[in-house]
Image (cartoon, rainbow, N blue to C red; front, top):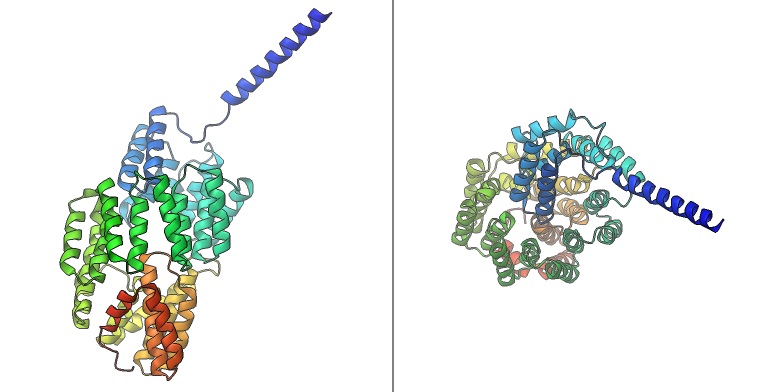
Length: 448
């Protein structure tokens, strides 16, 4: 009897083990491809993408598609690595492949990524929100969900929610070191610069062999006017990864903020020697062409440079555009910038992540018009509104916030609110006194 019981137990154990083996072996793979070689290339691409090595990532993703043309989701990651506008032929081709791809046999995550990407590229905010919400309700701890939700919360300046999501991301995906980078920019956005530095330094400690932690610290130090420290970090990033294009861009900004156009040109030349930095090189060329005459207080020169070197850029992309148009008497162009800004804002849904920045931009444009038309008190109200919606989320946005505070102080002073003007100017100087001094060196608008 005991022998029979023992045999029965052994048989049951075998059945349980066999069932477990079947369950494990039949578990659906994380990514849908029939090619182990394609999967290996894809994983290498993900690793490079997490380090922000986009050229390498793109090469691996392209190879993965060659090995398995039906590997649908890899085309989404290919599109993410492209520094190109929506109308770019390569982007359009990838978007078409995603839109018409068969998502009936892929995983829920892959379906989410593909459908969300298509809705996002089509600017269908409502559809994108529904896609994200539906998948998040089933997989709230999916790293791709947490990362996207954190990005949206940060854009909306919902700092507590963004911090909660990023903290959770670190918990569920501890190998995703770039989450520390996002936490650093979260602190930076709120003006908590010491906390941002500590987070970037933590990122650098965890990933000392990666370029991005050094680049992020360099970006922070430029915003704060700590230019020597910034240069060291950026050069460290380029020693680690010689084609880390963002660091060349930041070196250009650093040189221009120091008034060293020749150094900016050298940084551009270094970037241009890297095949991976071709697209960003065009942007750097435009920045140098536009800001070099501005350093000499040559507003007409800025206008001419923008038309010659930056003609392909949308006017709403830079606050500088409205000031140059107004300062050089191009009222029709200023009207077009303002109209375009209002139209873009009107098309945005109330929940669009980019709406808050667009509201700030519109307010600043309106303030600039009022200021130059001799109505500083009304201008101050618009600049004050813009200030409330702006954040130090990265170097360009941070500099824009300082510029907005600077002109707010000018408008307040011109309207007789000298004490408030002094307070606002002191707040701007506390972030980067060197940049404020450079703004002060430009000629004063007539209405002030």
